Amino acid sequence: MEKIKFVINCFFILMFLTISSAYAASFDYSCVDCHEKPILPAKHIVKENFTGCFDCHKDGGKSKKLGWFVHNKHLGGQDLNDELCTTCHRTDSEGEITINNSPVIKISKEDIPDYTDRFKTWVKSDKLAYAHNEKGVGCSGCHTTFDPDETDNISSKCINCHGNFQDVAKLTDDKTKYERNPHKSHYPRLQCVKCHSVHGDFNDYCDKCHHTGFKWKLKG
Image 1 (tube, rainbow, N blue to C red):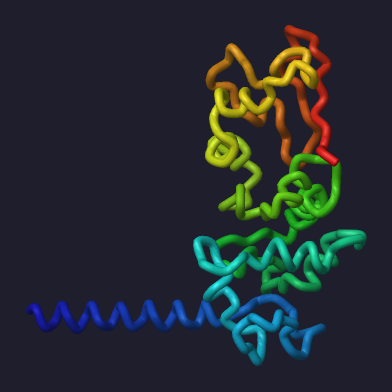
Image 2 (image 1 turned 180 degrees about the horizontal axis):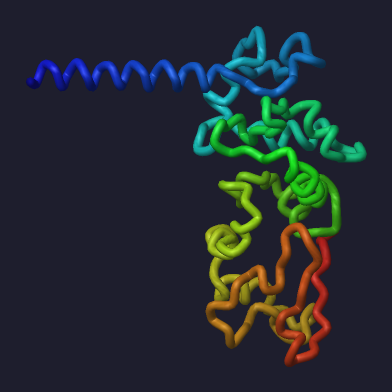
């Protein structure tokens, strides 16, 4: 019985490694349509083609993620639209595109224009998304599912990076800049998205009562 269990375990391990290797070796973007040879810095390991890039460039990996660099390098100054997105992100038979080269994270054909509009604010805008871009934070720094409903739970991720209300209040405790501290609130569990919209306009939630007229501005 023990030998049978051992054989079965070995079989599943072998299957897992085979599938993982096939996935890791894939690079489902059309880089080779423009680049016959990889354009890599001299200190990079020798690569003859664009395969296995996500073996190193992945969430939690030792190497930098490709998303931030590639998008900023290729999209600067261009008129971003969904057709431009699909020149690099290959569509499958159903017209869907994968994100982060993951077969799990997909965007349907119908939703591509909506996500393109959101992505525009990250590439260049006066929105909070571009402020994250300026700090080297890409989409996966906040998003894991690329689901609009994820916004309901995004505030916990804001806190993971920026700290809680008390921490942020210390950063904006400057009477020369603020008439009142915008983060010193009597709502201890107020969601960050009540005021801050990463891809949209800022909304002063406190203005409903206090009429502060506070405006968030992108730092120049």
